[in-house]
Length: 99
Image 1: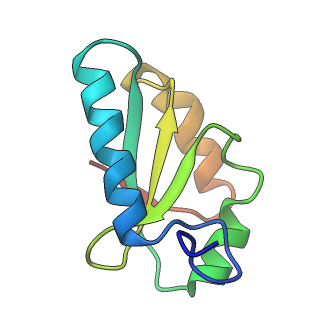
Image 2 (image 1 turned 120 degrees about the vertical axis):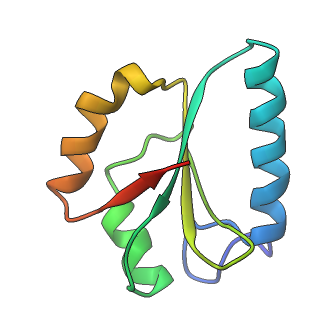
């Protein structure tokens, strides 16, 4: 599927940006909440995809921003969920910045 980086479950920047805009619209309309963060690492897309495996749910989305950085959209999540989310990611060596 051409909307993904080859060999990964990471969406390409064009497809991901459309999804980000949809998430923003739904959040603004109070349909649902989400957290958006960028992964901080210098690993390949394949390695990052592997690191994220098991950390994200099927309704979460991983994709590239326009600068080629890996971003994650955690659907149905709020800042109140960060105390549970952050350690889970850090325990797997995944650092992120909330957007």
